[in-house]
Image 1 (tube, helix red, strand yellow):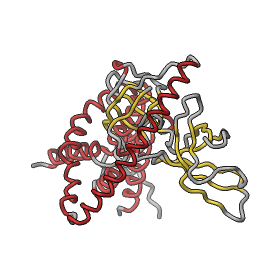
Image 2 (cartoon, rainbow over the protein chains, first blue to last red):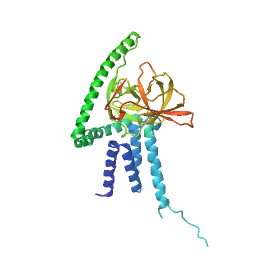
Image 3 (cartoon, each protein chain N blue to C red):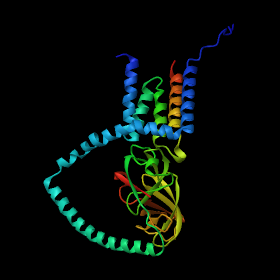
Length: 83
Length: 260
């Protein structure tokens, strides 16, 4: 199985996990994947998905914004610590 | 001797930054312009997974009941039988009072509100916010602003988003949300603040007449219960006390809600 197929399979697996599991389990998994993979951009989609499904009132864009900030920080820190 | 650079070093991360910002902007615009459509799609994708999880995975959590000692089960059974007898007697008293209440409302010209039942599709801890997704939408006559109850007299929130077949219920206990409430014993009107997880809090002067167990009611003639006081935090150095309130019963174990 090549890396692209693995990534697609992982995407659908995490998507099911995000829908079925408590939110704090999903947060741990997404945080781990964002730290493990060099550029895990799928985390922004999952933040957007949470907002589309559950967000209302003052929290309408909380998931999207927090995943954007998380990915940005991880990317910046990775670029700085590499020699 | 200095040798000036003829070409700037390539910024390898520029492509990644542009991709992150572009995708975030597109998704943000989608949420801003088409929230209902996206909710319909997201709910449609999630429904089969919720059904499978509820029917296949959740029963596994009850396996621990098979490991209980027989003696413990017998004691628990007898205790529950006694409680059932007491509750049945209270139910008879309640039915009499409820009938009297309805008759008084009829004399005053108030109509009985009709409650529609809806099943809960998703609730915390799946949802990171204090929201429920229920299986009644605009095609079932649900509108934004409809009040939602977990029992005849316990109100928990309102409908904030409606799609053709599902709705989103925002609990009054959502963190930071303010709600007017009336203390049932004294009639004082106060504003309570949601803390999340079916809890509220309010800070009042120390001499305010609020006791442990007091009920807070939703303003209006129907007197629906918002919550009961379960803890009062007083500090000798402060002239205020913090009242902690919780919605009665276990909101997150409910399988259905009632919509007015």
